Image 1 (spheres, rainbow, N blue to C red):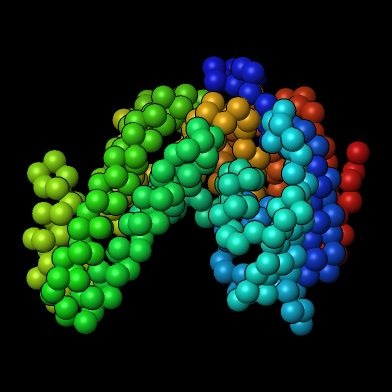
Image 2 (image 1 turned 30 degrees about the horizontal axis):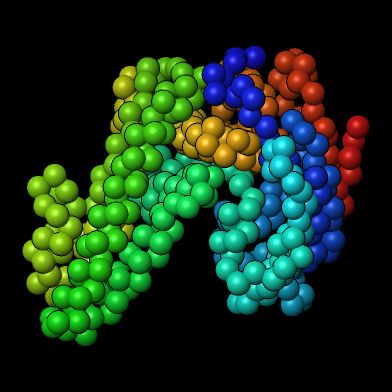
Length: 378
């Protein structure tokens, strides 16, 4: 396989045990993933994707397939629960549990109750690639902002003492307050005060986002070369959400105030930021094939995972739902080789084993899901 230059000496985060209760079609289920590749097969609708979804819910506080109240809880049950045990690289072991009713939740981390789902997100790093992940390239900007801020959140946690989350929360609170005043058509001293707060937090947040994008670039270069060499190269740029080269955010907010008062919401600022990916030898995002968009999105996700591995000392858990969808054999091989070279723990689902796994002679732990039961095959 291809060697990745930033993988040397980086240990993976390893999930040892996953338990579900009342999660979609599972009354109860248990999975014991192994280091390296884990292949989970089953018919369409068997529940194999739900295993990845449960891991994602624990690590992100949300599903990649919608809200908890929209079908995650098994029919006629009051709540779902997810429990996991894992080890962070060469560090200590951890365990966490989450119970969710769709409206309320309670969770514990290493035996202690937690007050914010961000504490779970901080402890367990998981990168998920699923059939809708192409939207990271060709979908709305919200997904790309979430991608950027997830990376900043984890990198700052790794560096200890970072203030990204403080800036992010200040900005979110000030934006909410300004929008509330705009809807009331309040052009007064209170609006001035919240605009000042929004401008300060927004400038700080944008500075951190720009630095993060710059630091991601070399990792993206490696991943584009490995996964999508036809692109030639990929360039990341941040569109900050206002004309930052010409105006401070405070001035941009002041200039937009009359329009914002008329519309009832804030039209400029970091909440309108976007991440731009330019592929040198391929069309713009609207001209990419679905397979090309998926590979570009996977390059972005793995670049961020690799950057975090370098900062944090261990790879996040990598999840790929329905790996073979819209990827030809040649590109599937590139993906599998790149994943194997990372040394990360990888959970992959499919209706059947990818033939390339056997041909590439990669060690794989195999599981099968049928009628709500998870079985180890080897």
